[in-house]
Amino acid sequence: MMLSIIVLPFLGLIVSPSATSTTDQQVQSKIQAIQQRDNFPPPRETNQHTHDPSILLVDGIYYLYHIGPNINISTADSMGGPWTYAGPVLNGPSVIPKPQDNLTWPWAPSAIEQDGAFYCYYCVSIAGSRDSAIGVATSSSPGPGDWYDHGVVIQTETGEGSDVSPFTISNAIDPDPFVTDDGEAYLNYGSYWTGIYQVPLTDDMLAPKNTLDLDTRHLIGPSNGGTNQLEGSFLSYHDGFYYLWFSQGACCDYDPNNLPAPGTEYSIRVGRSESARGPFFDKSGRDLVEGGGELVYGSNGNAYAPGGQGVVFDGENDILYYHYLDKTRGWGFWDTWLGYNPLEYSDGWPVAMP
Image 1 (tube, rainbow, N blue to C red):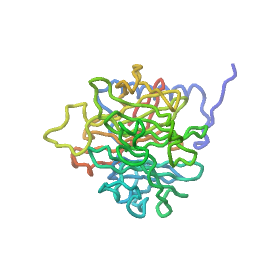
Image 2: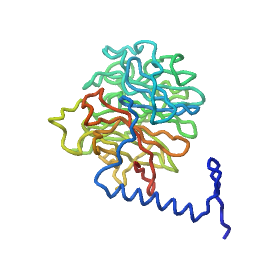
Image 3: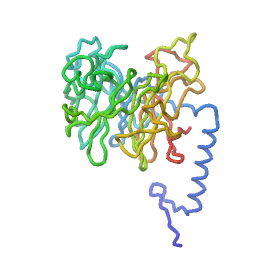
Image 4: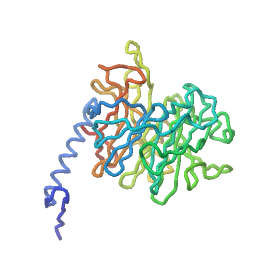
């Protein structure tokens, strides 16, 4: 048998296969230790306030898109920060013709780069309402100053196209754009009500691909008697599998004297599929539409109710990022912080590491 030699270019080292095996064993030992514990590793802290973060890594700079006036953009040289406010995405209120009072505070931005262009999807809505819309702005660069607001991509309850299923039963918030290696673009979206759906997009990623035959997929939904507290989907890819992440549980503005039952607060879950279109299953084989969802990260120590998650590849590892509450620093909507943990994969399933 010919022995291979692995060269690590950044370290200038030559590592034998036996040394590599030892490293793999150490990683697996750490994974097993985490899986056997009753809690999760603490967040890597950033000291950055955020809610529903979306992160891109472009030319060595991290760009954080998050809720704020006209959508905040912050930048940093590393995930740990320090983060610096760079400016807004939109130059003013959203152009979406919805009678909402938060057109200057769009929710849940989600940014993506495709063929040198940058897209920032966002939503406008009112809590507890399905009269919502997802819009998109585009730019030639990830920072502020060059974004054009195209307005509505999809909408629910009222407005053009909202009378077509599944827009008649879903909620057009929490956008999650994704482009496969073969160039097919999709928009995953949804919160509460009947769950999370996927709509194919046009090549310019500004509208549904076919308004007469939407070819939608129902990706995540409550089972009979299950919770409908499902939102914040995010699709990632790793080594042959598409991973559909989502937040489950009671979210936001907690009363510390009347918290949800332990385990029913916000948490981060996932399912996987060999297709970007699903169906997605958890480790036990349960379809996410039928109430499945593998718990990957939840409350631990002073960290409470992590969610609003995403995954960014830092050149070496997938990094799970999210917002969470620090029990020692506040319980309100705006008290959330940006946290993150590197991911390892055990039998193809992601595990949050210290």
